[in-house]
Image (cartoon, rainbow, N blue to C red):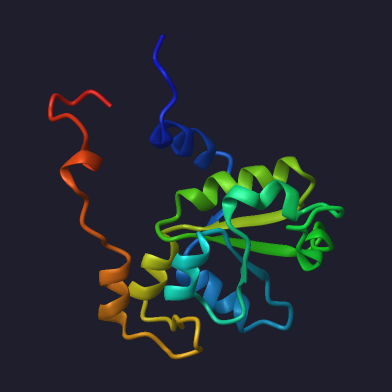
Length: 160
């Protein structure tokens, strides 16, 4: 029996996930009813570079952040089940998984940013650090492309 992998999970859920491109998001943000931007990356990633005004709820606590009664509850997110939400991550993969979770928890209008914040940066849209300083796009490219150590690459035999 073949095990599920991160890539296979994302591929399977991408087919059922509404994805938008950076230029679509740019238009939505300029509209009279902009979506809630939900950045599901880890806090450190968010602090390094994010879209101004986005809400950071790391994917690891998403399920409890969307319900009342928990220390991690995010009231703005709990109340957004009927609002338009765009889920953000670095490359557009984790956001597909998070969008699936939100839909299964009753959220009606959820999209994932295809290409993630990498694509947003490539489209030359602004990203800011935790102090509110606009980030240089080349610096963001470096942040979004950390080198992998040999241990993280795994065996060369091709078995994953």
